[in-house]
Amino acid sequence: MTSTTFILLLIGSGVVALVGVIIVAMRRSESEGAATAAEFDRKAMKVDKVRREAIAQALVEPDGGASVATMVAAPAEYKDDNPREVVSATEYGVSRRKFFNRALSAVFGLFMLQFTLAGLAFFWPKLKGGFGTPINAGKAIELKAEVLVAGSIIPKFVPSAQAWIVPFDMNELAGSSFETVPFVVAGGESDGIGLMALWQRCVHLGCRVPSCESSQGFECPCHGSKYNGHGEYAQGPAPRNLDRFEVQVDAAGDLIVETGNIVQTSRSKNFTVAYPQGPFCV
Ligand code: FES
Image (tube, rainbow, N blue to C red):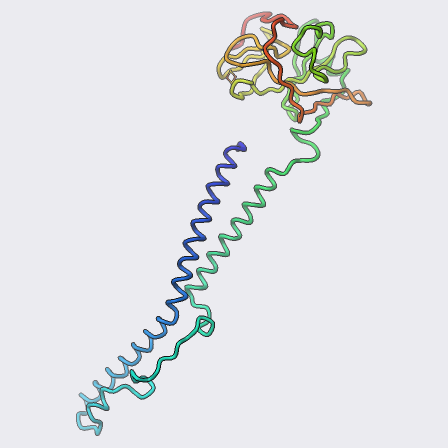
């Protein structure tokens, strides 16, 4: 799930939860007023029942000694002029409706709490490890041996850095797109062969860009953007070179890819490596 999808889900759920809480609140206010009314209704029904029973008894025993007025009258405690007691919400206690309304509110509250915590966990920056932090790609000297074989570039993909590691001849640096950008090439002090880390994400619309062994470059399968072995723009709708990460070689000789520091460079006027060197893959 992408960040955009997650944010849209978060907003959508928040709106749904808010509407739910408003509905519950409105129902609660209605039920507060209805509590005493419901109690009065029950009293009225009880009075009617007593009257009906008295009339039925009079029909069975017409001379049973009770006058019609007495027979149809409700007992004193249920007479209409008996002042009705106003029952406050506190005295009435928790009705079943109130209980369900409160339970519903509690469920919404728990849902929102859970969603908020999940959102925080998702966006909370990872302080150690993972994309966005410095990634150890391995020993620089070993990487050089892997990515440059008999003059051919064999890019090495580092999944945790989402980066292609490629070699770079330091003699090509002057006049290149990377000349004025510090920390883009590292490890070339001893033998003149440095290393670069290219972000695998196409700068057009973000597809993953695979390497192409035959052409010695990178070719995007989505809309056909093509880049040479150093990620320099060659063809297609891409607006610039492949982005790259700052790199450095630490005291232990490891290549550190700073995936939090992305370097953008404009299209190259002069390629630092020839392209294509064979048939295209895309
Ligand atoms: S996303 Fe790569 S060319 Fe469009």
